Length: 515
Image (cartoon, rainbow, N blue to C red; front, side, top):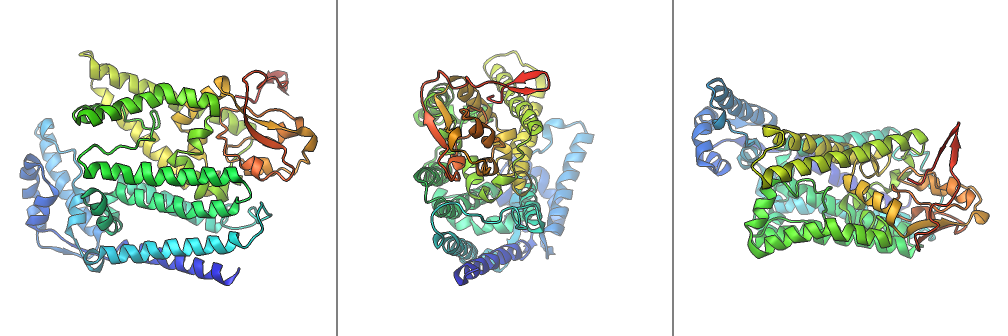
């Protein structure tokens, strides 16, 4: 390892160490002002303030003890209301996060901008220095980099440790954000500058998400700089994540408009048709109605039309934030995707099953919104919460990213994303996109299959000179970039003849792998 690589790695490790130290560095003290600031709803304040009063003035050295007492006080209020049958008075808002965040004190709270600059500045500088040294000094092209022999990229102890860390972070982010308020406080100055509001856990996540894609996007460009296609699409996901997913939504809030990601499309944006979102958009005037029509046009017009001409790659590999994270943070783990027939069968059932779930949930939601007849009665909210918990948080977040070091970089895109399933159906049957192969040039090195993050055995097609038309293919083009003989080419051509190759014989059953 060269000296610049060591320095870059050292800076990143130092930043990570300070970030972890910041997790538990504050103390907590509840005051009447903190309670009033954290519970703006007058009715909720009237019910909760007496229960929180015994905690006032008590100094807590850690958020674990503080959160435990605050949650206990709130739960006692709700338990009493439930015992009295006052179900309409039960408080479902989770005030633990704002109470914990506002009650914190310490060196981190007093100087959040300084610590934000130190932690993230060191991390960005270290990441760029490491990537620039490691990949910038190598000749262009893909080299044998020992991916199957490194602990970090071959399910070794470093990879397992990273996976556990990512899973733990997502669990805290989605379900226990009150324990990461020290990290959220770091992003307060930036949040106030962009939107005028204090940071939430989701703003912190947006900052981390964007920085990871930007820094590792540079790594991606350097690694694949021999391919103009890879450089362009990496630059594209970096731009869309920074502008459309991070900056523009925050600026909209500053301008008193609804937070909106213009590149997020239903059914990936599964709550687009929820009543609260529709009401918010309609009540926001002409610009809110524009957002509503924009979202509908993306679903009905843009997805089928653009996918017809360019395949699902226009979104999954050039625009989508999930794909952007998979292509940058997940690039070292693309070889871990399962290429077996069993995995392919599971993939077809799960990804289309999630799509069906999303469609049915949306139909029920819209029927209930526009009519007096309520499908499923009061269970509609339960269906929405189940989808959000299992699919939106558990699958897309915890598994989708946390399992990179275990199952490869596109676990969510491959097995769970309903938009990927929708795009894939169009790509499979009504798209001009395909990957063409020149079987006469294939030397069966296996690079294409190894680096395919979607679990496609690309070499099987290349050996036979067969076009690759798979609904799961995201058109990332890495298979073509790592091919030493130029066997594979991404093309948009006439639909005829895309799937005219003979079927594969499995036992006595004839099936095609082009779906």
